[in-house]
Length: 214
Image 1 (tube, helix red, strand yellow):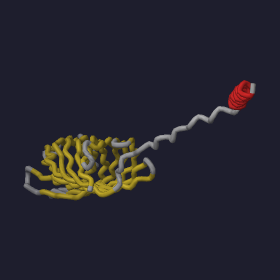
Image 2 (cartoon, helix red, strand yellow):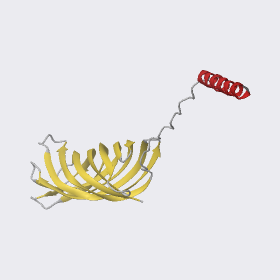
Image 3 (cartoon, rainbow, N blue to C red):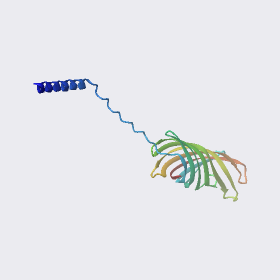
Image 4 (cartoon, rainbow, N blue to C red):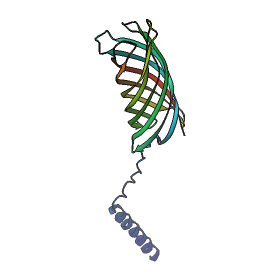
């Protein structure tokens, strides 16, 4: 009889324990830690080269037809990037050689062989990809030579450059990109044995570039 009472008490205890456990609130679901979005590091110094094609249009103040010159253009660049979140701000200097040459409507031979530019860049990074705009100051030397008296005159034109591009890392340290630039060059005065005249011009460049990031 005592064993039967003991078994009945044990069964009662188990039943009441299960009922109390059923009344307990369910454990809260474990919320996973969100994965942080990573952005590739564009900070630091870089250097490299560029190669493209350019179109130059020159005009004078004598109402002569404009002169068009075109050439392959290429050179080297060096710059520095600083990241603010996913925004990238930087400065860059570039030097280029070219062989722009043509004969003007007045029979003058026009040549442009080099140009320099100092620019700032501002862009937005999508991990390994960067889209940016750029502006700055550029310099190009134009030489005009007369075929009649062999007189020549050269001037360095100062201009404003505006452009943009896209760039992407193909390895941890090497990036490649495409860029477009438009340059507005101011007036300079020329004299080839006659009266003075002024010349200005516009230059468009489309090119590819590669950079090594230190």
